Length: 96
Image 1 (cartoon, rainbow, N blue to C red):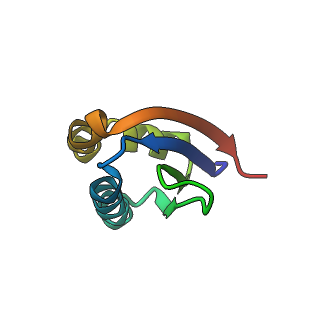
Image 2: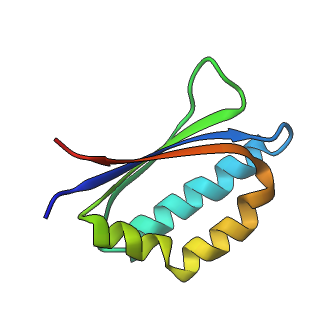
Image 3: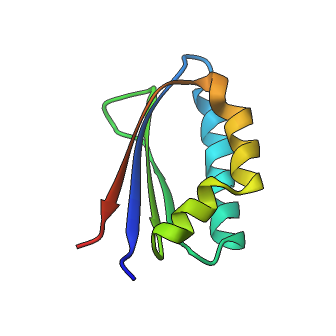
């Protein structure tokens, strides 16, 4: 089984950035705690932007990432943050 990495680039609406950071960092910690297949979940803030974030998530395999996407806690997270996000680009990557 090959590890899979999800790299997500997000632009957050002005005024929602701090709240979004709080929500996504708690979501990441919870994901690592309750999902055995989640090996890493990091939230990065590019120095040159006050409105962008990069999420780097590593999963044991594609099935673990699919389980994450279909989980109840992911659904709850999406509902909380959907109106905070201006744009989202996700890249599913193979770890080489």
